[in-house]
Length: 343
Image (tube, rainbow, N blue to C red; front, side, top):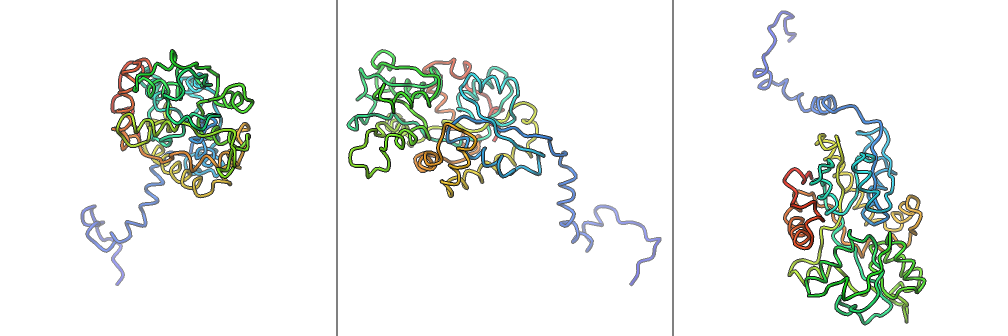
């Protein structure tokens, strides 16, 4: 039956209770699309030459955020000073960084919020002496250490102090500007031990033909797993909320986009773990110092899991409390408040 043209229109409540409401689900995508802001011209992702950057590189290569940005690109940062400059200068929208650096920037008003923790352990003390398995075994020894006063140096200091060792007094720490330079000293035999982060560990083992483990007399060894030391010394799971991704500037005020970034990062991380060699090839194209094989080797030796910052908050704050006790300046003098935990 055809309805008369002069029929009074239904009000909202009447409409919801008629058969016309069955059409409502079909309208939802249109409404959602209409409510979303126009795509940004560019979304810039940045990270270090470390395994935490692999998902960001995949996100840029696959344009995983095409609905949110016309172009997504990845740029590397070399050292913590450049990282801080990029964050303060808003030269990137999403930055992979150590968790303590994110907290320090936040407490100093730099305008960042932590979205997730993705790297829960990728630090190793690599050595020419396979008998050295705990930090106490390295007393009196020279160790190449990158990034003085930053991760991973602060983890070495913290874990040594926990067992009564003053790392700077009881060990001979040779500070280098980057993990790659520490690795070079190790593989060229100018030091016997180096504190490295993956995939630098795997790269050193490859370059000295110390991998795979079936090698009869490897030149280098994974001496101390700092994650295992953390678990042993603090009576906790052997995982450290070491690094993740953080949002910078105005991006923090776009919760839908932040949720899309987190979802895309988690999916990219799953892809990297499932396709290690392809991931290695992709990363090596962007980070020239790394080789595809080293990145592929590093993936199973790195504790990788994208956990939202809100979900991981208790673990993050426990870690931060240890850093505060060691040196409050590491976090900008205090624990960050609730607004820091953006994911």
